[in-house]
Length: 473
Image 1 (cartoon, rainbow, N blue to C red):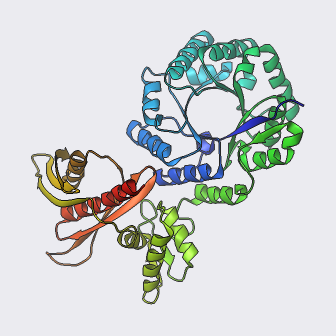
Image 2 (spheres, one colour; image 1 turned 60 degrees about the horizontal axis):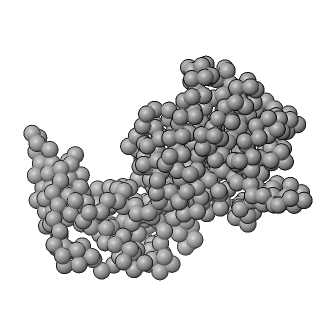
Image 3 (tube, helix red, strand yellow; image 1 turned 45 degrees about the vertical axis):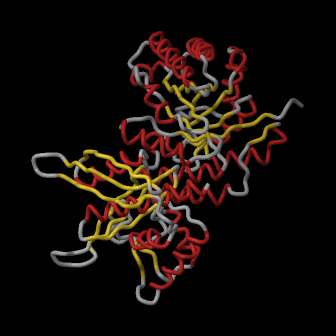
């Protein structure tokens, strides 16, 4: 018996085409956090379609995920590789993917290129990817229906160009396990260059045999499987990991993922993908993100409240969770339920109260109908004076930008909420700011008759919490 080899499991939950779950920004981050906790080898993200939003998502996932590799497809455009890598470069092990249809029918309708032109474009893009990262994957879409000579020639070329993983796809899902074995064995025999790289496999579940075909692929020498924790059309991660754990001695392979957390965490992932982050709360005329009117019953257990806080994106210490729970309990006698916004305000008020690093905040905001907003911000950092001037799309945006200028720090603004807490001309306004640093959320609250001032106070409050944890680390 030869040496035991490792099978890598790649999650493609977000890459199942039109059947992929439609998740919000926060829900995607939560999905990736759960996958990382599960011990997945690689998480596949969608290609960039909206430059600003998708790039921010990729950076946020890269900061959140601690152990898994992150993979993102690149386009054939001139700046396609640089655009993706600039967003992905902070990942622990960034992977760039070059994906292209290789069957004649899909080349004609999807790529609109002749085989030779497509082959040249694929090879050039693989070379560009390899120039910026050591982990490059070529994905041969619809490989099982490709012309055999063209496919074998192309696979040789991409290996020579620097691809480190080559994945072949039964996109139609039309092969039986026995046919899969014949197809893969012939590829290994005809393309000896594949011995230099990791060979991956992906399969549609059109015949309800995707899992069986994946096992057949492993027995033929495939060492990377694309599966989904939330399967809509493809290989089931839960099934394939369980089978490989049971049969690893027979196949002489191992996988990094264990089965201890498998069923619990995949159940959480399935719930998340079906109904979003608010699935365990009662929805009442939910707003844009389901948070505005979603409620949690005040008779819930401490564990339920803790889960609600985690699903909102917070990662609190036991000490801070206890403070929040005590405050939550104080409301139990007067209210049947509280909204998630109210729960979030409790978190902002009770959790991680720290000595401020940024103090002595002074500002001037200029705005009007004929000019854009401009903010001049002064503040102190441990007594050292700082100053920043910036414009913005409105007074709040300008104020936050000027804080970034003064502090030299940029954090993702995850949420900004405003609500009135008193009535009348001199009404007090309360703001809640959520900043994200390295995947973790920090919230701050501010209250003032000046809503811009309340926003600045909330931002500085959240910023001080980030700085405190950085300095204590």
